[in-house]
Image 1: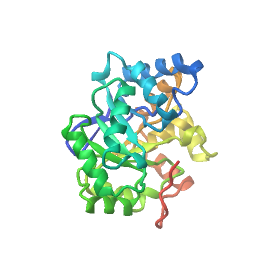
Image 2: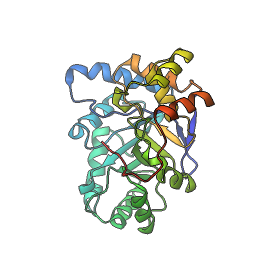
Image 3: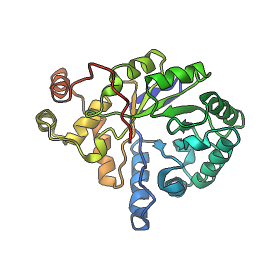
Image 4: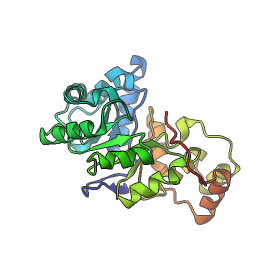
Length: 277
């Protein structure tokens, strides 16, 4: 059974989705990547995240091919470049993404990071896209606590999520950003939830993995998923990797496990700048 997270409009989405950064860039990997994406879909990982930036659109084109005929099973997320988030440009950027993705709408459209366009103008553009039926809802990515405050002051109360770098090694958001999002019932979408497959050596992760007959990566992913308001979007380019990620959702960490992880990867005690890739 796929656990879900509820968006502000009460839409339930999978807690575990699929990221796609760097996919679609190597023709030799195309069949394997499509097979992995389709396998994830069959496992219930139906939230798919991409961006116009990924491969200069080639990732969106891959997804358009991978999900031809099954679009209705997918919660599709894409992201707009900051420089394309202004009046007029956001409509053109969205339309280009829709064409590459072979769809008539996005379920969620995110501002990829803060840029030169005033937030009020981006909010206005997002709302116009909703009215035009091009997107169902919108959100942001890589926004720190102060950015979110400015977004709300700019009329952005309808923000559906904030996609951020969040994993055991990058916990800075826990200090003030995650509590603020939780207070406003805005889920966090965690990208690189297992640190792009480069976790540091950790006695805690190793011991917990041995106790649960799991890998350290599965433990780290289960840790990110421990919070019922977090959606994790790890990338997996092979079917075996997709299956490994899915098994992490069924791994229940004990209080002892969580305390051991906290000892190796302490929670923040002061404000730090939001990390991003």
